[in-house]
Image (spheres, one colour):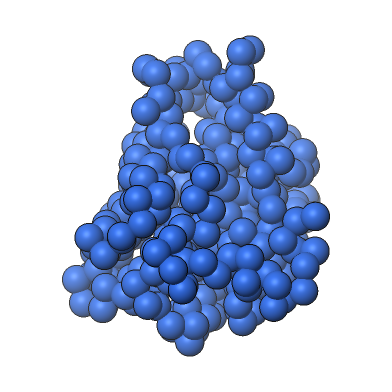
Length: 310
């Protein structure tokens, strides 16, 4: 039986050790590995419209999402690292180190992907610069705990999309090009592996439920609107996209993707529930399946490893 099968009071008790005892981690046995991978070779032959069926809308969506990641990951690391000296639990300390390692590699690989996209005519460099300025200002002027609350909320975004990609073949196939799909699904695996770390740190340092929930309410709609705006502007400025056959047909095809479904939005809204915890959705079997597929004896991404994982 998973924690999601239990009554809410029991769920809260099952994950509540961090709030009452010395054990601040919700899953002390979880090990978070930093895998040094590179996707440069697999992205070398990237076509302009790499998404399935050459869909320019899906391609611009993936590009817009990726443009947020490098400086977004830096922001997550800064926000969690700020409270590192207040973590007393050695298990959570170890998981924070794994979180920082994974996020650092994510940022590096998406920065390279964004560079390739920029060479193909996407406005990813501009989007990166705007994201960097906004998040650095937020770090500078917002309270540290507010930055940590924002990180925990945004980690729920990435965890929700991660579970979707790991579980849904249609969602994975949307990315089309093998190198892009591998990049996003590898990222999804590691986001799922560390999905509770920022949340556990927030709870360990006394973050309130009120701030947690209202931060997500503010971020959720804002991020969705920002992504939609980025995709629209990207297509408007991209002549090649407008020449890719029927734009209306491509838009309808993208609209049928599970990535933008009502179910995905509903899962994002689960964060608002009192007593919510990222581990309420048990993804351990999915993670194990994809660790084996990517990094097992015959792993699909073993050739992408730069050196033995830390």
